[in-house]
Image (cartoon, rainbow, N blue to C red; front, side):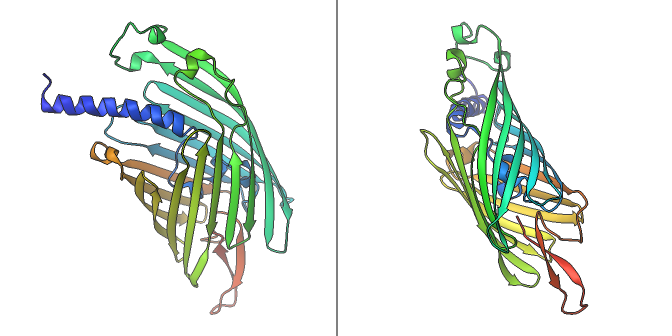
Length: 329
């Protein structure tokens, strides 16, 4: 009979294996808490809407203290063209879960049209591929003689093609929808399908910026993920920005987690953000929560606090010169 500590560890390992199955089937795309700063990761229409080139790095450690829990590393770039109509994006994501590692790579292209003086609609396409690697030696199995794991390792590559729409006001609101990959179902053979079921996922995101005062803004936002054959995942967030530099907020993922977020505009060209998730479901008893950090570099950006993307110019009441006020998404 294992001791209390050993039994607790055993339960944790068993739990993460069960949750891993649910995560794989119910959340094909990696999960982000700071989705409002990471839109280009899952919507190709976003990549050309930014004011200047951006480079993004993100790290997420999910369900810490549980062996084999998911970790995600993302590197990306959004590059607008000088014609203010087109843009290119690069997205590389490495997602690890137990014995499996999946690496995504895609290139995105976007084209936007002017709907009114301050509203634009962007169309985007992405194309790339994903490499799935499964190393059964990383796990401990009840039946080591199971025929499905005797191969030791499995490697597979499959193409991805996705699309998105992103409509936004220059300073106040945005609404987007995307499908990261239309090529599903038939991509996996029977062996891989026992581990990964690739279904089409739809993402819908939106947000609004309320200017509470000259130096304080409030931005509620939402992200909905629908994976074919699974319940809808809904994320709600509320962020406040002060003096165009400090951002704090909270987020709630229905029936899953509550989160705290913080961000700081370190300099004209650098933003850093952090979030912590506490699970509100049964996992909270076993996990130390989830940590996520994001770092963004803005290449050739203007004045301090010019935001994460397009900015508007306002006259300073005191000095009579133009300063940048952030679009905040």
